[in-house]
Amino acid sequence: MASALRAAILGHLRVPVLANGSNLLTPLWIHRTTSVRSMSSHDDHLEKSQVIDRILDIVKSFPKVDPSKVTSEVHFQKDLGLDSLDNVEIIMAIEEEFKLEIPDKEADKIDSCALAIEYVYNHPLAS
Amino acid sequence: MSGAASYLMRRAAQKERVRILYRRALKDTLTWAVHRHLFYPDADALRERFDANKNVEDIETIDRMIADGESQYNKWRHPDPYIVPWAPGGSKFTRNPEPPSGIEIVYDYGREDH
Image (tube, rainbow over all chains, first blue to last red):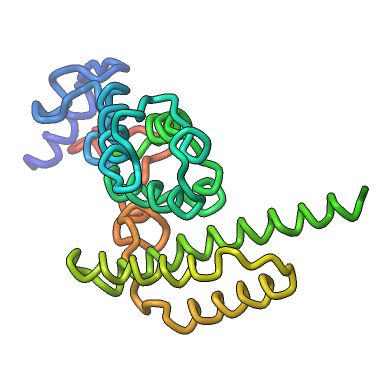
């Protein structure tokens, strides 16, 4: 009896639903602007200055490199006089620093600080 | 001269193979030697092995050495290498994928039978 009454009442009531989701319907702990991405791992947005600082620190702390020559436009093999294997080592250090996994073919092409900074900055999962 | 060009192309391909081999071997060394104080001497030893053959000029010898190195790498590969979690093979890969756009949740609790 009560359930039939309830069903009849519910059949006649219509709660207005706004298309963008009103405060009545969304729980308060869901921040509306981040929607479904708030719980993914894709959220660490790095500033470009942070990226530049960290990459330059890595390159400066490499034992075969003279720290005073390192700028953000430096080419590893031409300006710093490094070997191609040293290049590989620097890229591995960058991968470890930013918790990235760079595919082999891409990693082969990263030859200078500028390229490294661009790659890391444009990578969605760099942290 | 097509001879010189093809020679240079072969050398360039070999250099790329060497770089990729060094990269994989270094990552493998890191997976095997988890503790940093063990990794550094091992990485140095690996670098020495690569540097010892740095000045070989004969193309056939280089090819043979690269094949040799790759087979050694295959022999020593770690069965459970460390892969960054979000990369394919890692533990977080496709764990929380973004739902396709345009899908919404319809909040109709209590009104399902209408």
